[in-house]
Length: 261
Image (cartoon, rainbow, N blue to C red):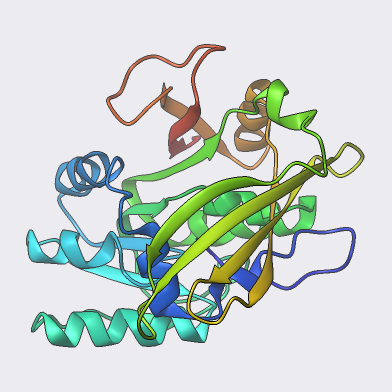
């Protein structure tokens, strides 16, 4: 995911990215998107750029498959962990610190992708326009921009703000014991932002730390219009990583975009 600190009216998801080891332990079970993005990278037949690459959860496996890939992210703790993992695997991957809303790398890519709902950290129109403009400037002829976001679930949007649900339970990478993560959730109707807090409780110490994760919600027609008015057309739209057609019941919105003539 991409990491930003914004105004109180924007999206601030930076707090959950304070530690690359904790992030990896939390997200270790996530594998559902790997085969999809690997297939997209192989289909591209050229250099690949991953925006919001985080700790290299996808970047490193794609490199192992022979993909010429570069990772870009804003969060220093995530990049530190990514570089450590790549070095441990004997891989040379350019992990660059940069802002997906405005970047200049001096080269073109056949595929640019932004996985793991990272685009949802961009709340304001100006930020989204900056992202699409930067992507357009870095796409090689025939290149594609691929990303995924949640399909808003109306049941989640009306959750009890006092309700606390477990979302993760993992071995603490910092020492003995496990970490239990519970989630509280509220929906900001005016900003279209899900305001989430993850409460990390250490079984060893009994202490709990709260970290914020705010995600902009994009509704299906809004997302297509956003792409259109920023110079892109949808070559494909999927409802999951098995490439099933998008429908109202889909949990994901996965767009494969090309630049419009």
